Image (cartoon, rainbow, N blue to C red):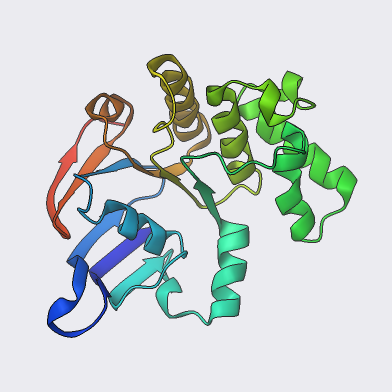
Amino acid sequence: MILVKNLKRYYGTGETAVKALKGVSFEIKKGEFVAIMGASGSGKTTLLRILALLDDATEGEYTIRGLEVSSLPEAERSYYRLTQVGYVFQDYALINEMSAAENVYILSMMEGKSRKESYEIALEALDKVGLKEKHNRIPDELSGGEKQRVAIARAIAKKPDILFADEPCANLDTNNSKQVLDVFKELNEKYGQTIVMVTHELWHTEYVDRVITFEDGNLVSDEKKRNR
């Protein structure tokens, strides 16, 4: 589903260039739950941003379902990102003045869907993360784990091919982290959602199929964790 070949990302030029990714290659199959790990500065978040079409690679190829998304014009990349890719931020990125449902359905309305259809889509997504009964709550009325689950609902509402998550539990305690990871696991196992998650917590790998580890911009290990 995801094929990465010799992906490089340099910041700056010449001898002072920062080589965030030094030519990495791997494949992720449909329905896999993959953790990307590594120390700070290892290149894992840079990689995720490229995969989610939030940043450009300096060199290399990146395809999804055979489509070379890395070479798409910016307008087509933006549309693909809006309609085919879900992204969960570590800081929730919710609008405080909006209810949970409104935070979710705003993307559907951006796609041109009616308010009624968008609201129904939002309720379905909130139901998948166990928050349908709290659809009218604003973020200040939700716990940290619930806020992150709203952010997940927003990301999956459009039924994306792939769900990317950048350290989604970084701001959560252990209990709330488990709630969020349980949601990811259910989405993966029950709905076949492909998930690529950056994390630094070793215990999070109990939930995933594979762990890809980076060090200084290089892919240093690719370990299978559980059988499907």
